[in-house]
Image 1 (cartoon, rainbow, N blue to C red):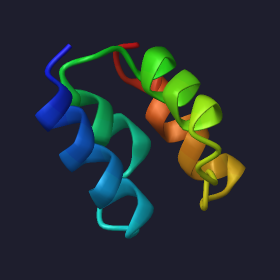
Image 2: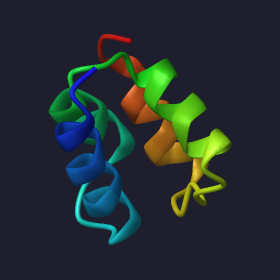
Image 3: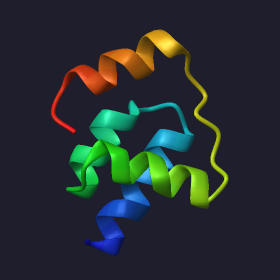
Amino acid sequence: MNKKKLEISLKKFKNNEITASKAARIADIPLSQFLDILVDKKIDFHYGLKELEEDFKGPI
């Protein structure tokens, strides 16, 4: 995992600039792993169920 890419994606996600799935793609990790990182770092999932469902429609 590229730490710089992960830092960028986390920052953009926290600033509501991108979705979790886009952040995972930027970090070049599976969405499920990105969501685990959000939990580990205690970062809020600042969007609703609809957006989360849309994120999971793509590749995980």
